Image (cartoon, rainbow, N blue to C red; front, side):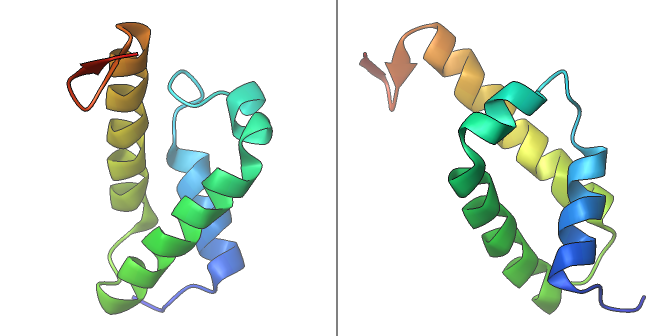
Length: 80
């Protein structure tokens, strides 16, 4: 598999992240965080270049669980 550039990886990975989990509104309200996460994930991808779809599922899982615990008012086992 040919290594993708950061820009290509970014576009492809986010194309696979479900908008039901991370919608455009949330993405653009937190764009700096999304770019930071994407860059971190890209660094991992460069050392283990598997399909961006795998990384997208990992990012989805992170946000799914983050939102699940935020909705309950809990982060790190602590009530917010």
